[in-house]
Image (cartoon, rainbow, N blue to C red; front, side, top):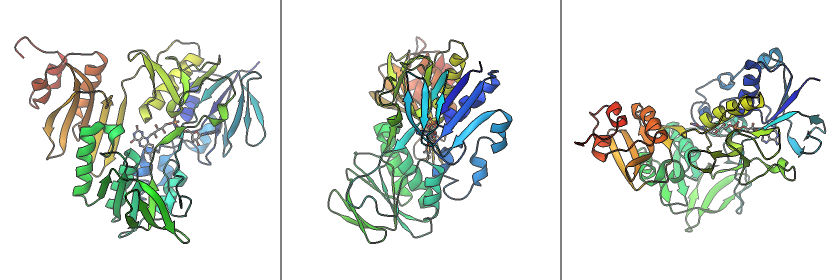
Length: 411
Ligand SMILES: Cc1cc2nc3c(=O)[nH]c(=O)nc-3n(C[C@H](O)[C@H](O)[C@H](O)COP(=O)(O)OP(=O)(O)OC[C@H]3O[C@@H](n4cnc5c(N)ncnc54)[C@H](O)[C@@H]3O)c2cc1C
């Protein structure tokens, strides 16, 4: 009988998994189910060029629509998986259809966390996860418009930068003491706060939103410190929640996401998970981690598919992420919350530097701003746990190959 593989979540991890199955020679039935109306597309431009209308939407899609037919990938768009029956091995869709599977990939990513304070449902308050969300924000953009961004995480700060470049007056409210703390760590997060202020963004830390006021639309943000900020629109970027509601009661183990082992297998045989929805066991770190990034979603999808096809592959990456804000191209490698000092190479004033996050004599993470050569070396420093000396890291004239060779007796 023909084998059926069902993939729930038709975006990066799910879309790439379907492609890989065919590339690896899977001849059976592939069913790809996605809640969005759009076929798989690239999310990073949504907070940048696509949101600003500088990139035609057609360029966002990974594949033309015909690709899915040509590769016999049954695409069900605008349909949600409502329930997984782990015993009968069926997925129940919002259309009422039940699809049986031999193997299943959970690739449902994450949903935005929503504000619940007074006024939070007023029109003009936006979130950003999907292409549809980006279209909504794009319609608000015009020079001189007043935007309040709630939450100075990566999405919030990328939106702040893009809207500022479109001529909006931007205020950012962040509950924590520095912006971008979770993504970039305390030191580089503080530097980014400074970079945004230099561009005229009013970045306020240690303050959140208490309520929104307005008539037909949002007109004012009332902060937790009692200030009232007039606004024309709001974008909230207060984090995401793994999209696992449909898996409750299915037997798939959940803990702030779908728990998988290093082979991307869930607790149910034949059921795999990949991407932002999955918390995987990292063999080098010895614990479960979740990495919300493009690279991780793609690598995990590839590992899950390879293992579905009978191989034995392990997912154990060094986390890699990038964020573009203004002309600042940042790449981050490794962990950003586990260090005792920062060693800078290059020039902060010229906004061309690498910040090595160091613990003892090991690099735990690196953030490179407009200075990308250090990133490839950093992956090796971290994965091979090479000892380092601060003076060598800081010496911009010393090639990274020398740092990778480890300390010399003289250093
Ligand atoms: C604006 C923005 C900018 C970003 N920029 C960067 C960047 O610069 N660098 C980087 O590395 N990463 C970036 N990311 C993160 C990156 O896009 C994600 O890590 C990646 O998309 C994760 O892929 P995924 O397939 O796991 O999840 P998703 O892309 O979220 O896809 C999951 C899909 O599953 C669907 N779904 C959910 N529940 C169900 C259900 N029950 N039934 C059917 N379908 C369902 C969702 O609608 C969605 O389409 C950015 C994200 C956003 C939103």
